[in-house]
Length: 71
Image (cartoon, rainbow, N blue to C red; front, side):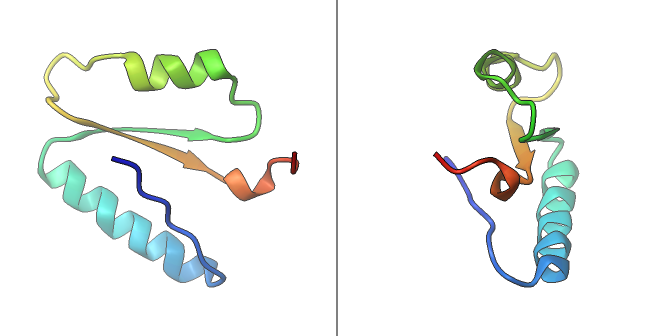
């Protein structure tokens, strides 16, 4: 599943993301965060493909995708 949180009010976006991540932490879901700038395909594959020892699920958050150059 992929969820994209997007909007013009950055404060509300960050507050919403924080509440979502808090709910995931409460369920013992592993969370990995990275910045989009400098993220390579191999880095992304590592983040998505690495299994955690005690967590059954994982969430990968990629911050600042909007800052990437347009193709």
